[in-house]
Length: 467
Image 1 (cartoon, one colour):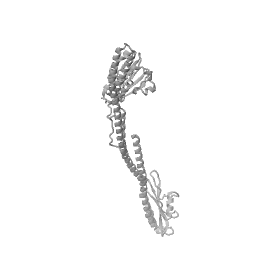
Image 2 (tube, helix red, strand yellow):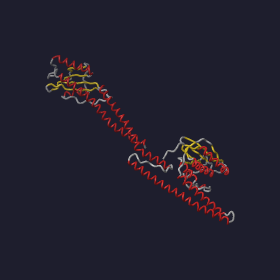
Image 3 (tube, one colour):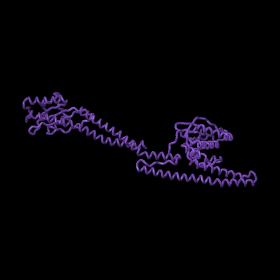
């Protein structure tokens, strides 16, 4: 969620900065050009004042050659100092004075348009904006007025290199400011996203903890927006209710199992006494005795499952390879009795687990594998490690399960319809899964090749995170 929210915030802030930066850059360029235009207007006004005394009403030169030379000298010095072309032109375009001598008033374009505007008795309009990538000239024209009539026009032709450089430098300053503001905005967006998403991350961690069996996990509703704080409080209330319901369910199962064991024991005792009065080998008595023992096994498994789902695991760094080897050795006698080869492929593997609960889980998985493996076949137990997890893999040589059956294996009281003749309560793998989950592990199943079932007990190689 952070990877989606943070780019959105950054894009929005960048759009705001650009929306502010573009008008600022345009305004900066216009201000720089306006300064140049004002300077050129002042220059043309000064030259126009000199040119008034060089012309008479008819447009011919007057006042002698002295004033004409003064005007020409002034324009030449102006061009030499500022590298700006300037000239005074009569109404018909005749040159009164200009500098440099090779400069010619353009026959068309901006220069001619400025000249035409000045002939109408007004200064030329503001030139079109010059941008840094445009190599253009800047024309400004002012009329020379004598006795209310325009008798000549002063035109300046300015290079725009320095203007474009100043505009570009101003834009670089603006860009640097925008970049700095963008960095601040990114940092602010990151802090804002972290502040908004912190309760979400805490909620996600707490939900994952509860999903993996750590029912005590809760959320401290102390940060983030008010809506998320209310969500955190609602989550805690929901978790309390779920924990209470599960506790009541566990207590009911444990109490019912415990309360039923005493009557069942008394019933089995009376069956044994009754059997003494009947002929030896009575089939009905044998059937009742077998069903009673099966019911006793189911009650014991229910009690074990209730305890496994409730009791906290004492997780520690455990030598999984050595522990699995001990459990394989303990089951070898039963495997030989059933004609099954129980193989252990020794490996040095460690993981974070409760040794007691891991032993019980491995017993349940190995027992299940031996039940469904026919005589002459093998059950192979292997310990492996990869990345952040370690695993104990039990591969049997039984008939295996279909895809639909694989989706249900490990559910409480579930047994395949093809294996109803095999003794068991259908709770062994459920108990194993609950025991592994208490240590942060898991139990998964997959079809074997070419047959059989592969049960994988996965355990973390590092300490589980605190709830």
